[in-house]
Image (cartoon, rainbow over all chains, first blue to last red; front, side, top):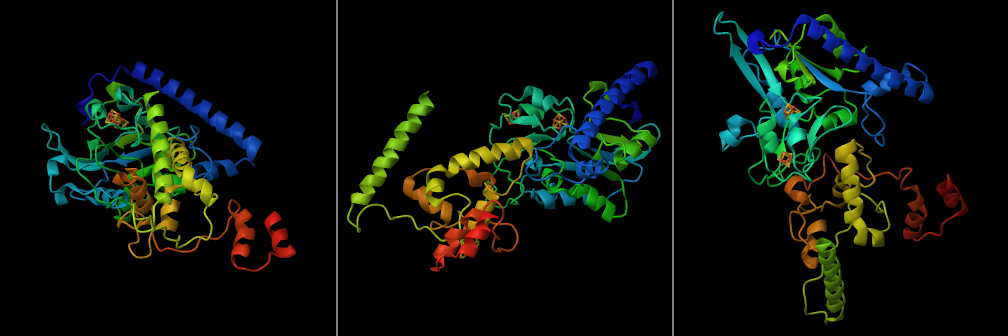
Length: 266
Length: 160
Ligand code: SF4
Ligand code: SF4
């Protein structure tokens, strides 16, 4: 996996990119801090941002939701995150689908082997919630969009099912609903025929203030603890701490999309 | 422009249809919609008359707020409509022909595709909404509905 992007750039270029990113991050934090100073006592704000917001308040760009996948902890043969996602969001898993080739895969498990060393790597792959999402660039209707807090979604009210975004996504993260779902949807997760869909970072849970996703909960419950979800703009969040401490990668970092999902051990 | 004209002509047609239906003797014409009483709530979040005419505007506005901005207030949310209006028999607003949404929409011949994507059933057990800050102003109506004169105390509570 580490050979995936040989032209990732010289160390100097990487460092330059990091500096830019950390400057941006500092700006964000500065803005959040100022708002906190105006609104509530300092310290209270951080908790507010991390654990949900009042329901009448819009998603804010002070937050950027992200996920860290520790591939060294991801279990061989474990599929708990995929099952949890299909249960939470109401999509039929490939194994149970009448048309497996068309089945939605909001998240899938990949098992990779390095042909030289035979080393095996396990990881879940899903929408990477790009900061510069190609799916949004190509969408002719504006249905594909990035929410203020970095979650990339499809507005099914405007999606015409053209599937441009499916072709544009480098991670094969999107799928089209081909058939009538006949009222099998979850009340919190509307989805239906003729629209494209992908991982939403469990936006219904995020908006409820759960501060986590179904896959992360399942992974933790299985004891693997390979997934961490949180606010990458909050320097005190678990995900930010981990990202500071351990080496992580973005898949196809050469595309420069600034991904919301980072991997360790690939 | 074309769609505006279409809409206007459709509205005119609907109005004509309703007037015409009203003039017919009781036996003739399309069967009148069955408007099932909401199970959970006592009073809609807006006046009934307003909602009959404008529920689609209210829903469209709220849907954009929710999908794009992530604002999930309950007041104009489709999910809450369903929570209240799902039939006691079918547990749904659109499963059988007498269910709340379908009944009227069949009568008016307006096809809706909300339920291609949205679940027609409420989530979890159906329980009564308490009045909240948004609906507290209906308290006097509820009190009137209970065939009891509204007392000065009641009004004082409404004001709060
Ligand atoms: S991973 Fe694919 S679907 Fe997700 S934001 Fe990036 S381009 Fe869009
Ligand atoms: S399928 Fe829908 S979301 Fe994707 S590009 Fe077409 S209109 Fe946009």
